[in-house]
Length: 319
Ligand SMILES: Nc1nc2c(c(=O)[nH]1)N[C@H]1C(S)=C(S)[C@@H](COP(=O)(O)O)O[C@H]1N2
Ligand SMILES: [Mo]
Image (tube, rainbow, N blue to C red; front, side, top):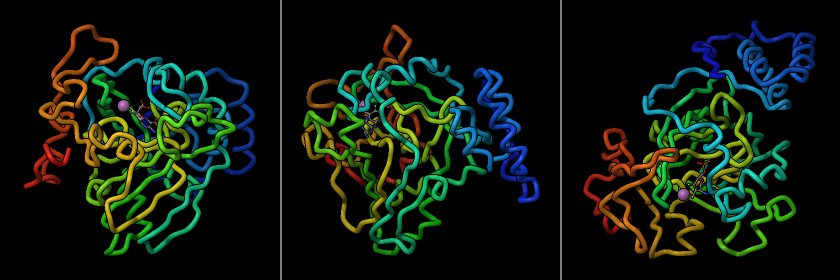
């Protein structure tokens, strides 16, 4: 099922799939099962992404490193058990109800302290010819965790092209809020639309990914289609889904969780076994699919890559 095409970024314009062939493939793709789809999609030029998207098939990507060789959480758990409160607060709700969300067309507003503001299509923000796979641990604040093979681009690549000004110290992200397609919005469990934020150096860290797929496929809606953040050293809620706005700002922006429970959720929310949630310990976690709990690691095990971002900071105060 995994598609590896290490040198996909080396394809030149001349290799572009001719329109007729592209159309043919699209027709072929439509008539095939998933295994066949993956095989064919591996040979598709990134320009055929739209056709691939239309039938929900595979993405072409390179191995991006930063991997973990821990056992991956099964696809059915990754896509069947998670949080996406816009579709309800139960962990089975996203898989059940996120299918109602329309993700094409999709546009993203880029605003604030940035040289290239505007409204962008997903494919204008994410370079689909440079997709990489990264296998990351994701630690939910509720003390469960998964290991997920994400497909995306470093957020850094997107930000660099947008050109933040010297006044941009933070980045705020916002999720779609469309009541007709998101049944969870009828309850005010959070201050919709869902918002999150990062310090600009956190956003530029090579680990921070803008994901458009997982397990070699286009992101399922319940995992945040068509593009979502993955910030693996922070609690899961920082990894905001289905992004419709990116704002570069001078002051630390607000976030949905900070607004609803500031004593429980801080702006930084780095995974930290030494700082308990007011209502439960963060020392241990249950890897989905395992019986015994394991120790939670500082920065979710990514200290080597990110600890320097917080040098000199009191991480008990800045939780
Ligand atoms: N917009 C939005 N993004 C969200 C959430 C949400 O409710 N709404 N939940 C967060 C939480 S708490 C977690 S643990 C992850 C879980 O989803 P994943 O398994 O697809 O990463 O998504 C995060 N992103
Ligand atoms: Mo979470």
